[in-house]
Amino acid sequence: MFYVNVNDIDSLRSTRHYVACTSEQILQSKTELYDVFVDQQRLVTHLASLDHLLRITPADKERYDLLNSIRSNDLITSGGRGNVRNDDFGFVAFFRELNSQLLRTMLDAQEREDHLLTVEMVESVGLDPTRDRQFLTELASLLSLNLNVQRPTDMMDIFSCCC
Image (cartoon, rainbow, N blue to C red; front, side, top):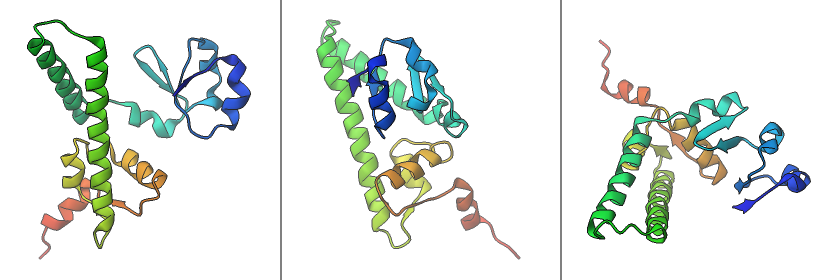
């Protein structure tokens, strides 16, 4: 992650992946430079294929509530003397563990004979098997993992019988 401004536009055009901060709103109009732009609390994309990925899922809400409860418990145990530095470390640890769990689960799925990341595996890491499916598929591709992400509708085939 780094800080960018209008002087960095040429460099950004040639950079394939990056996360950056800026205070220059003019960069929002340069849609060829980014996939997602965060404007305060609002996520903006010009790519229709990403639009649904930016919507909050029930699993996202659960993680957010969990993170808030962890923070609240930390404040209670510290007697209400919140420490921004400790909050930052707590948040980093929370997301590091979340990322580690997800990667372990994806690697486990790749070791399976069918390379199937099952609905249960997806739910075990706190993701939504339907709404997070594209994210998981793209993440597997980015990590060069040979995975098939199970569709929840595929589960129905297991339970349905035909006479």
